[in-house]
Every structure is written in C-alpha cells, then in structure tokens.
Length: 80
View 1 (tube, rainbow, N blue to C red):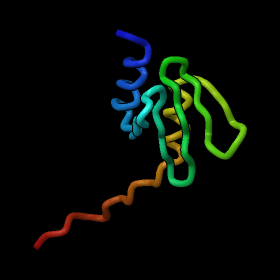
View 2 (spheres, one colour):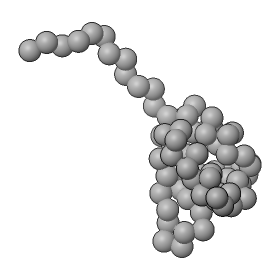
View 3 (cartoon, rainbow, N blue to C red):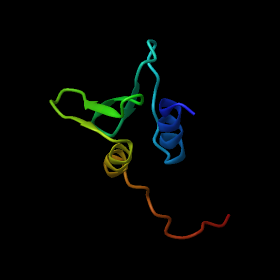
C-alpha cells in the first residue's frame, strides 16, 4: 500500500474529515477556525494564513481532534 493511501486511511479511521481539491495532490482539513493543507505523500501540513508548517500524521490527528468542537453530552434519555 502506498504511503499516501495509508495516511488517508488513517485519517478516516480516526474520524478526521477532509476534502480533496480538484488537483488532488493534497487534502484540506478544516477545524472550527482553521484550514489546514496536508500532503499525505510527505506527511507535511500547512495552516493557512500562518507560517506554521509541520509534519507527521499522528500529530496532525491530535491537533485536529484538539480543535474540534466538543460533543454535547447527553444528560439522560428522553422518552415520548
């Protein structure tokens, strides 16, 4: 399996949503207030409108999960 495919499958398994732009060389991951361009072939990422450029699929997943909106906990079951 290609490294690119493995990295995209890992994003899917971890529940990180991404979009593939028309050129298809990288993917776009969106958080609540950031847009991140990620190149799965090299594991490099760039946060748009900043100078932050980093690497690593595991760190990307942790970063994105930390920036997601928290799920609203259920207080109890509602019965009709």
